[in-house]
Image (tube, rainbow over all chains, first blue to last red; front, side, top):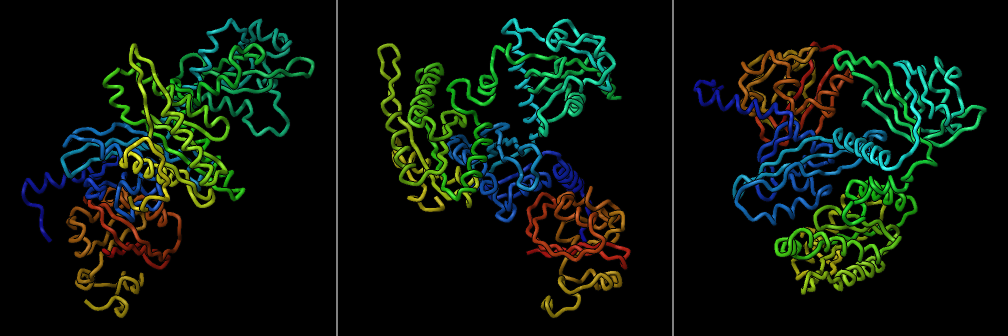
Length: 438
Length: 126
């Protein structure tokens, strides 16, 4: 047994203990991803991505979920510096927990030297879920202010008993204050029989926890009829944070016939990329997982195409981001024109797009990929006297849906895309046409 | 070192009762790590082999709460949770330890029995 005698050893030991106990996942790896140091939190997070620990390779562990990381690292030219910060890795819902929120990790990569990388991993699932709820509220509040819509206000106490109704609420529901004051607010809830959505008591519970809850449902009217409305429940007054005491809630009722923005429009705002109109990354993962499940049930194949605009950085650097944005829009428009309703099209980030083609065989997928490539190659963006042309590289993979995960499918298609880039760009590469361990 | 299969005190053969009765010299001479925990999770036994391979002195480990301080890398559903959930346990799993931040593939044998005052974790480096 060696005793820790010198100050240096003691310091070393303390430092190790400090890193070991760090509540964020810390990983040191070489440029091939082989892990040389990691702390327990990192290991725990990697465990949840599947059998990652066996390979002892951080790229292998993450690649199925964030294939773009490898490209980010290989295209990083400096000897040291930050490669990405808080890059979000959408892992999805763990198969074993049906009701839990989708898992999202935030990954920061720093190149420490020519042969060494540091990665931090953090579970940000809760924050992302919260952000999504807030975004939804934002969109709702915005639509609220846009039109001169009428909305009714009902005050309830901490136990859900009605204290007061404003004139608009009285007009909407047909009730007088005397009919309702003192009654539980559930008298205003008139859901479909057997509906699986939350009842108003559960909604109040969520509002108590999060500060608010927003839903669309049926509100009872005097005389037994009902009307469709959006219902927002907010905590009223100051919340005693320490004691978690809620003095009461404000319920805002907004009949759907008066809503300036219909549910479809609202949904579009939450699910699409504002610039290009393609689905956004988070929504793509939700939809694509569902599509693959559906295809698997019917024992169908599923195709996925990854699209990356060639030399996009040069476009941005030469002509500015405004022109870059025009190019992104034009590419998305061209792709959506080709795909129409045959696939799910999304912008994954930067100049990267993807298309998921449910129930698609290899010959259809390659045909669509070729048409996408051709449609992009004829785009011209007019800048003054200049006619800017762009091309894109595409990689695709087709697999039986029952035996492939979205992450694996993306990984295959991304490898093919990378091969398309390396072999000269402006082309389509089939993942089956490249060696497996490219 | 004798073949593990033939040795009654080998990693896969040794029983809870034998572990409880081992004298310190024998325990320290075994080729695999032995960690013995009290019913509430404090380290009571930590053999030389484990100390040497983990790079942690016995003084710094004995008496600590193993899963919450020394071995947070086992404080999860794959290891610590088993000891909490099961009344008796003899489970061998492949695992990767990160003691002192070094990823180390190991085979773990988790032992718990109603007749024994201690729970044991046996650790064989692969």
